[in-house]
Image (tube, rainbow, N blue to C red):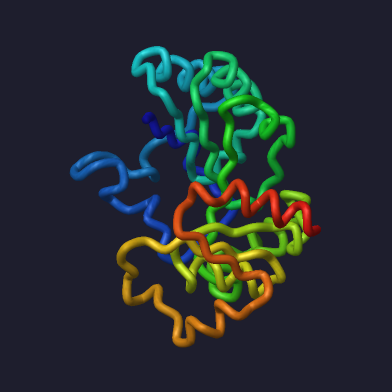
Amino acid sequence: MLSIEVTRECPLSCPGCYAYGDSHLGEGGPNLRSVSDYRGHDLVRGILRLVDEHKPLQVSLVGGEPLMRHRELSEVVPELSRRGVYSLIVTSGVIPFPSAWTDLPKVTVAVSVDGNAEDHDVRRKPATYERILRRLDVAPERFVMVGNSLKSDVVPALDIGAFGVHVPYATTWAAERVEDESAVRRRSRFHHLDAISELPSLLARIQNEA
C-alpha cells in the first residue's frame, strides 16, 4: 500500500492535529511548515510517478484535506481506476466530492469521524455529522454505521437516527466501553453481528424493510 499526502492544506483547525508536528515526516526531517505543495499538472504527474515507481495494489490519498486538490484528484482517481489500482480517498467531508468517483471500479471515499456526534462536532466544526450526511446526500434513517466500538461507532449513529451495527472484536479498550450495554442493544436501530461476513445479508434486510 502507498499513502500519499496530496496537500498540507486543510480548512479545519482540529485540536490535537498531529500533521504539523516535528516528527510527522520522520524524526529529524522537515515539518510541513517548511515544505510546499505540488499543484496542478505537477501534482498529477508526481502522484502517477510514485505509482509507476512503487506499483502498489492500493493508494491512499490523504492530507491535510485531499479535496483541497479536487481538480487534480479528478484526473488522478479515474486514472488509478483505469489502471486497476485500488484508491482510498480519506476526507473530513467538509468539501463535496464528485459523486462520479463512487461509480468507478476500485475507488472508495472514506469520511473520517471523531467519536460521538457531540464530541466530533466540537473538534471538526464545520465538518459536523449533519453536514457530512448532507454532503453524502444520505438521510440519517438511510445511514448505516458499522464498527467494533459501541461507544465511538454505534452509539453516535443511533443518536442521529441512523443504524448502528456492532461487530465486536475479541478485546475492547476500556475507554470504549459504555456504561449500560444492554440499553444500547435495546435501541430499535441497533444490530449485532458475530462476523463481518454477515453484513451483506443484514444490509439487504434493512433495505427491504425500508
